[in-house]
Length: 135
Image 1 (cartoon, one colour):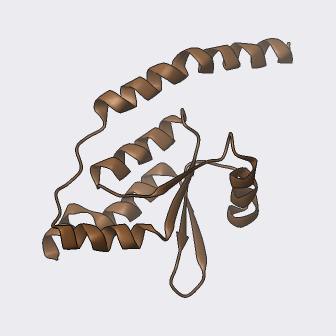
Image 2 (spheres, helix red, strand yellow; image 1 turned 90 degrees about the vertical axis):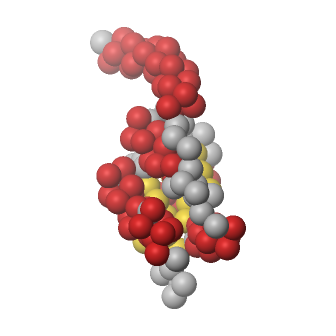
Image 3 (cartoon, one colour; image 1 turned 60 degrees about the vertical axis):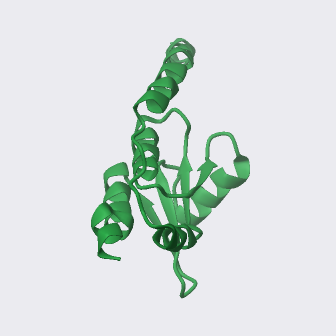
């Protein structure tokens, strides 16, 4: 019975995965406009960020769309297909759960932020439109 259930969900993922990725491509918003200097500042800040994710995870898609809307250049690390990234996530974050934003702070500490809503809120606090307009 367990094999049957596992096979069913693998088949379901195989069918829905491409549909979800196509939907992401079609519905990803345009990036907010920033001056070249401001965008350079944002790009520099994004060098300390990486997103551990699965390509077809709906919560990861939600975060990737917000990253695109904010015009961020954040490294994407596939924790399903890359065993090194999976191990980093398990050892650093304490569990293999996606999405997870790795934040390397200037003082050398690393913060692991889980949950798509929390990640999006953090990204908006640091890179949102109010931040872009204030500079």
